[in-house]
Amino acid sequence: MTQSCPILLAASVSSGAAPTDPPSLFWCWPFVFLLLAIAVFPLIPRVSHWWNSNRSKLLVSVALAGVVCAYYFLRGHGPDSQGMKAVAGVLHHSIINDYIPFIILLFSLYTISGGIRLSGDIPAHPATNAGFLLLGAVLANIIGTTGASMLLVRPLLQINSERKNTTHTFVFFIFLVSNIGGCLLPIGDPPLFLGFLRGVPFLWTLRLLPLWLTAVGAVLTVYLVLEILAYRKENLGDIQLDETQIIPLKLDGKFNFALLAGVVLAVAVLVPGERLPFLSRTLPDAYLREIVLLALAGLSLLRTPRDIHKQNEFSFGPIAEVACLFLGIFVTMQIPIEILRAQGAALGISSPLQFFWASGSLSSFLDNAPTYVVFFELAGALPSSGAQTLGGLATATGHVPLLSLLAISAGSVFMGANTYIGNGPNFLVKSIAESRGVRMPSFLGYMVYSGLVLLPVFAALSRIFFR
Image (cartoon, rainbow, N blue to C red; front, side, top):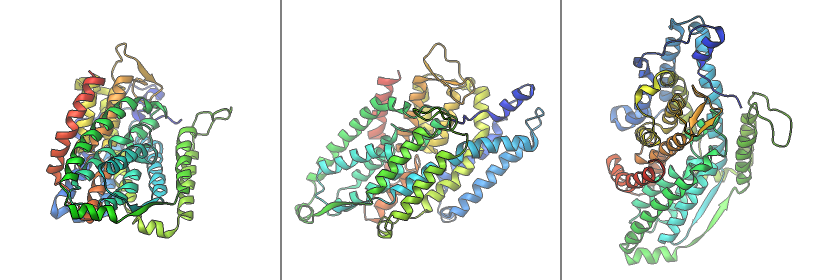
């Protein structure tokens, strides 16, 4: 596959020049400002309406990316690290190598999963709701956390429409389906796909299965206890109505599951620069994989009946929002990544336990995809000190300690559940649930839930797997 590389350092080496000095920390401000805008602007009444427009998000992203490009254009170190050559290198690394494959994968998963509709109304027993959450945690690995959330949240709302005490169900839905569930494959959650683009083998993330089983099992157990107590508090009339108003579950758009299987196969097999399985032919360093993914998404759009999209309230608005924001994120994060490559050891974060909590803490309040990249680069800049490593990666050393990579992967994916702003699907689920009359907790109220439920689980994970 095409490996990402430290563009400016690589350019200096190839020309025989001395490596360039890293940027000042001051120049991280475009990256930090963009992440803070994502986290804070929706919460400020005077700004939120303007920020809701994808045009506004694109404007901010492009402006901040322009600042970074201007920095590299004017940078005065070495013959190959300034002017248009430096800007071209940064844009090739961030846009060509990372952003385009990333956004095409998300687009294909979003489009194809939007052609699947599960409808119906069955009794909302505790076991039924727990089964939906477990199903979502599994599906999140195959169709992504966003796809699984959008597929299952509406039927779960319909199933629980006769009940009153359901807030906890949709909070735990965010925990399990929108976050923790999607850690077993690179297509499950955006951070893991960025690791895949940097050389992590497709099936390597299955090493997270023990953590997945522990986290999902623990959170689901807590949910069942709360759900049984909540079910006992329901009015008898509501329970009787729930038991009698039954509409069998119906799944439409089943052919899209075959297209999703095609997405998984394409990502796993069509790796640029690698040989096809059982064949001697090497794939070109071109967008063959992305062309196949777009073709699968196009086939879904052509074959999916319009009624399914209408009932799913499907639109390209959410994926356009992701595309606008990540355009800026991928460019602006080049500066902190370069700093980490050169000075990462000075931060004092070196053990798997530290990587788990550091990546997780930032992922709770900032987007977990760039957070993963930052700590992935940091781990790859540190000496291995005899620890078992995974090689062939696009890091300063070409290696990352295995246990540190497990910690960064788990921290980034799992702790995106700690707040509404930790991962994209969180706010989508909250908005959809509130539109159907569910009283979702406030921003701080949600953090009370996550603090009481998730932090003890994460503490147990860190003690079991990373001490």
